[in-house]
Amino acid sequence: MAANTRTKAKVQRDRVEITKLYLEGKWQEEIAQLLGVSQEMVSYDLKAVQKQWRDIPQAELTELKAKELAKIDHLEMTYWQAWHDSKKPTESTKQSKQLGSDSGTVEKKTQTKNGNPAYLQGVERCISARVRILGLDAPVRSEIAGADGSPIQAGLSQVTIDAIKSQILGIPISTASSSLALSTEVDG
Image 1 (tube, helix red, strand yellow):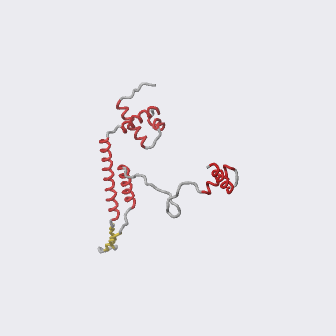
Image 2 (cartoon, rainbow, N blue to C red):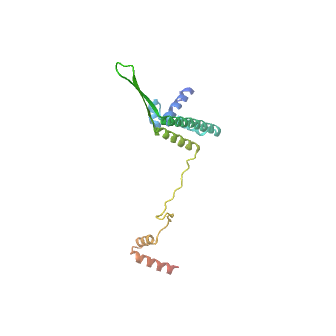
Image 3 (cartoon, one colour):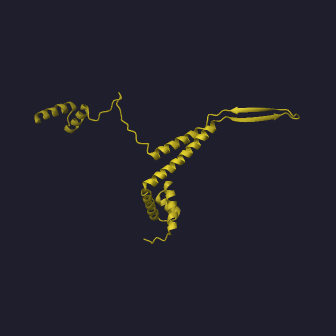
């Protein structure tokens, strides 16, 4: 293994770039090719970065969450303002003059708008991000219900049990039920 010839500053710059590419979803081999380093170096640096992430003190983690939440709040306010602005009516003025005359007409039009739904989608994304950061998106419990809405009972029906007996014993279903019943009576 070759000695590490990177300076601390170079290691730090490499780790920033490797982390950026990693968070973009790039594979280690791809990152190595893009940066002109070995895949092993990328792996080593990623492990070091991931250890730093795990070692972040709880207070610092809370501060980082608060910072991200503040960014989301600001972005959401911007989306809301853009939504309200997109609903404002627009006015247009058309002025016309007749040739050779100083008189003319001025026509004003006001157009109402419904608003751009893309801004509301942005608000929705902000809310989703906030919920994820706060851990409020717990899984929802669901059950499969029968035709009448009651829970489905797990277990085997008598028909299924008879079919299994028939396969094991190699005899027709009706005979399997009666022969097994006889054998259990004798054994019991």
